Length: 404
Image (cartoon, rainbow, N blue to C red):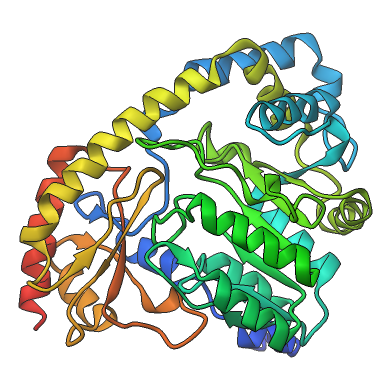
């Protein structure tokens, strides 16, 4: 007689922390999982165009590093980052109008980690953080995990309103303002120079700290570059500037950095030691070698020219794809375009009908810290050719019509 073995038992998962229970996943990631089929024209992602990666230049940098300094490349490194990479990044920052030395920078595993480290170093549960409305979605997640109270700053199609910002600073006494002032995610808008100066004045008068996130600033198609808030009078000593190679070189490298005053930078380094010790040495050395041997500025110019063609293709087709009464802006660079449909449309409810047409976007509602506008949506224009964009917009129009 065979005795049946007892059924295996599984221990229950320990109770999750309140912050893990309260913070949901990224709707963008959820949409990408649903729309991963190759036949779907995906305007939902925020991914750079992979066919434009400088594969040969990056491969050559890795080969050189592994051939010349293999022991260093495969070994642990310092938390602050490889000196050669910090020197190269500091030189690029200085050349763009913000005097920076290598020791002013902390290399991070993508600029997303930089934001997480700042939240760890600065925020206590209940602290108030001011954000744009709408705001970069993953920033809202970071602040939510930190237990912060997130307050949206009123603004318009040009970005935050400095007068409204000052009123909130006086009333709410926030720990910091988080902003993506150049080619913002999700709206693609750029804060004008005069507003940057006004925001800096508010910061100087009231002791406001600013976290200025700039992952897209080099992807300019037209118009003049607008100086960082970090370079404005009044904000020089109270702005943390975040940068990244993800959108201009390759996101798989996971190379980002933060520029901050010494005491705050040291606190972020301690937080990074607890998180991952250091950003991968091999990736840092390869990035430094690429910056030394290749023309990143020339590469970015070529990428921006392609992205401009794709933006123009999307702008050309929106009037036919979106319902009458819709409005949108013309971004001067970056990766995203923001549209607002008539008030009777709910882009979250309409998404399933649109996906059935094998095209996708991101509904605008999750990007809002304040009351969401359900009629908004984000479109990424960089990962499809102009021909694919035209077909995608045709499908989008059909899906919006069928969902009504």
